Length: 92
Image 1 (cartoon, rainbow, N blue to C red):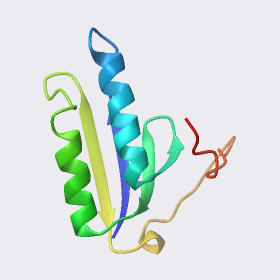
Image 2 (tube, rainbow, N blue to C red; image 1 turned 90 degrees about the vertical axis):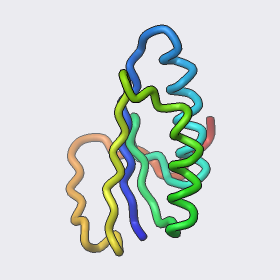
Image 3 (cartoon, one colour; image 1 turned 135 degrees about the horizontal axis):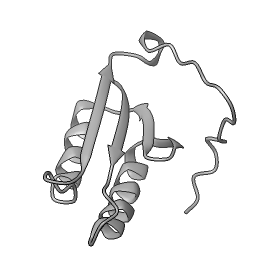
């Protein structure tokens, strides 16, 4: 399945740590395409594992995370404006 994952981590006490951990976990499964936005093909099992890893990191009272799911990337037409980041720049 093709997913787009978007998160918003509040920058308060503990926010920086949650942000770093969330970014690293998402990067294990998906491609970083923009600040706090990832996309990519994953299996149901990989998505479940991703969610299980993120669950203890995302602070439900302060942060948010949205996962858009589709059977295939072609069902989500993408329109990009402005600077497009290089998907191969996956180094931390």
